Image (cartoon, rainbow, N blue to C red; front, side):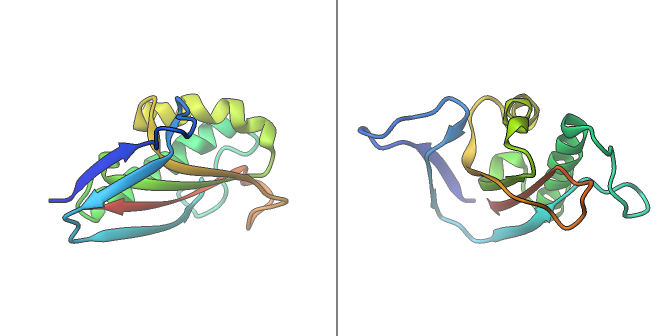
Length: 130
């Protein structure tokens, strides 16, 4: 089983909402998840205009993909999050905390001009070690 240690170098700011770095030892399997978006049952964008609802669907999909690969959300070591409007940043952290707790994995947050469908407000890709 892999050991996952979240840490921050002594002279680097340690933000409360995510980990600056993650050290993995003893890894046997690494899961690379494509960007997850909020799909409905027919494959269309779900929860049009509702950022928090879309974010929950995205993190539920990440959890499902990681569990299908043999891990748990604790196995996630890196998140890359893409928002179509950076003003949603304030809404993101509480939803992410529902899934990862107050200290999320190593993370990158980027505002982008658009995602693959104009109704998607968030896309998140992940790396997990199991």
